[in-house]
Length: 225
Image 1: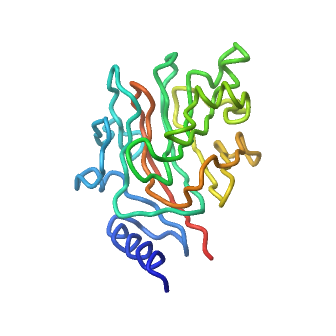
Image 2: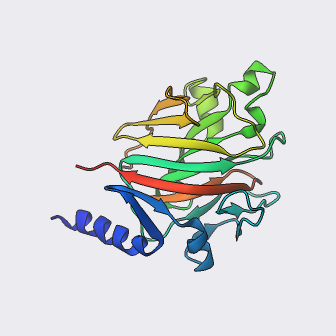
Image 3: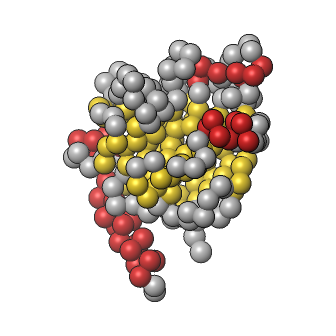
């Protein structure tokens, strides 16, 4: 067993205090428990436990005139596999950017998949096509990708979810590609090639500039060798 493999296994054991094993290789993360024990590493946001009774989850609070915010999970290094969670934003133009960061190694050094709920059911076809986005910071943020690779790293979601309601996202991370499935759709809404050579790192709940967002039912299934 090499040291990297040992470190990854130790990280999973540490996190397992707040994780319930569902089946072999699949884990659900207790987002509320992590919040109650102040176990997140927060970047540029505050985090609270949801109190509206819809789902047991957490909220990254809005922060005006700010850049992205992340709540990093503790003691976890993710390589390849599947990340699933329920997400809720809102239908307010340019005020709701919600998703998940992965392969994180520091502030603004990560990959992310995020959603723009205000574009889910937009009648403008250009806006509608900007519903789900991949980024790879620090080099490939959305303006660079939209300019240099139009319509490759952002796509519409069909059928379009309710922009004010919870929706389910399943992100499949392979060695070189990332695929995004929304709700129960068997067809991916987005399939992209990774734009860096990062192969592992932290997972975090992610919100975009000024935005807040709600998160629940996070499940992580690492790919077995």
